[in-house]
Image (cartoon, rainbow, N blue to C red):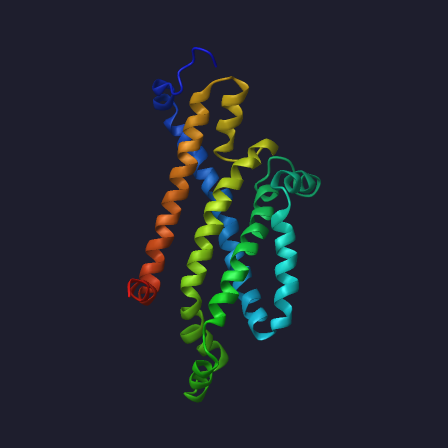
Length: 220
């Protein structure tokens, strides 16, 4: 890259559509698994709260999955889900996100004191009504915190998928490296960071809207 400037702005200007397309693809690959993981983590967290002995084995399994190198998992899935397919990247990212969300869900549900549950039951709340009105609202700040970590991690890991043909902004890293052309690499890094910051900010705002009491409690 001797003599090559770090950023060629004319290249950026002439590839805005391409960069937008890669950013949108990256967002889908990274964030759909987080949404699916939330759907899985909440019932699993409820089960672990109701049956405490279930939590440690489940957490151990997901921690082992989380420790596996993402590229190795992508390669193992290729014979089953196909090369350059979204599913090959999104399935591991879903498991990684569950590994983050499960502990925060359980911790949030455990913050509800038993007397509060008993009082809700005495007031005529059935299990589902109590869950919706008492338990999930108490767990919401923990869920938002877990979602922030899971989303940012997923956005970062999704770029690795470019090595097996489906990685959104990760293509820019490969393209820049192969051509010894740093501009796509810099653009990819900036866009990944901006996407992560934007999603994190949206989750923070969502948490303040859905659980304003948590913000007031933190301020006090």
